Image (cartoon, rainbow, N blue to C red):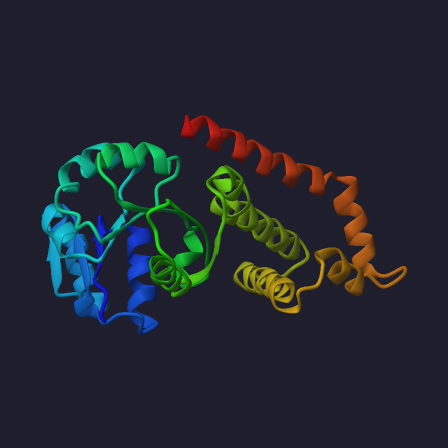
Length: 269
C-alpha cells in the first residue's frame, strides 16, 4: 500500500525530509504533497524532486495525506492545527518537528484522539545524515511506528526516546552541529596558521571529524578507547590532547550542552 506524505510548510527541514523520502525510494514523488504560501518554494520542490501536488492550501494537503508533517515554526502550531484539525483523517499520523511543542499541548489543540508523533531532527538532514529523536503518543500502533521510523531513517538515523529526554536531545544533537562547526573552524584556523591554504584546511578538518564519528558509530567502541588508540606514548597526539584538557575542552562542551538543555526546558514551559 502506498503512503502519502504531506508537508505543511516547505522550508529547509521539509526539503531535507522530502529529499530523503524520494531519493531513498521510500516513496515516489506523486506520493508527496506539500503546501506553502510561497509559490517560489513550491516551484523549487517541484523542480528538484518532481512533486506534482503542491498547494497553498493547508487543509487540502492535510486531507490528502496519510502522514501529515507539521513543518512550520513553533509559534504557528496553534494557528495551523486550528486550520487543519477537521481535515486530518482519523487514521492519519501527525508528525511534529518543532522545538518545544509537546505531545500533550498539541493533543489538546486537536480536541479529539489523534495519532501524534514528536520528532527532533537536526540540520545534517540536508545531506542525508540527520540524527532524529522520536516519541509517540498512546494512539500510535506498531505499524504506525514502522512508517515513521522508515521515513526518518530515509534521511539519517533515528531512535525512539521518552519525551522527557527531548530537551537533552536538543543539547546533544539538535543544536550540536553548531558546536562541531566551531571545532572544525578552529582546527582549520590552526592549520592556516601553519601555512595550509584555508579551503584545504577545512577539507582536512571536516573529513577527520566525519571519519572519527563514523569510527564511533561503526565500531561500537567507547570514544575513550578510540582516543587511546591514537595516543602513542610521548607522541604528538597525546601532547595535543593534554593541551585540550588543560584548556578545559571537556568542561566547556559539557557546559555548552547543559546550557542548551536548560534553555530548551525554558522554551517548553
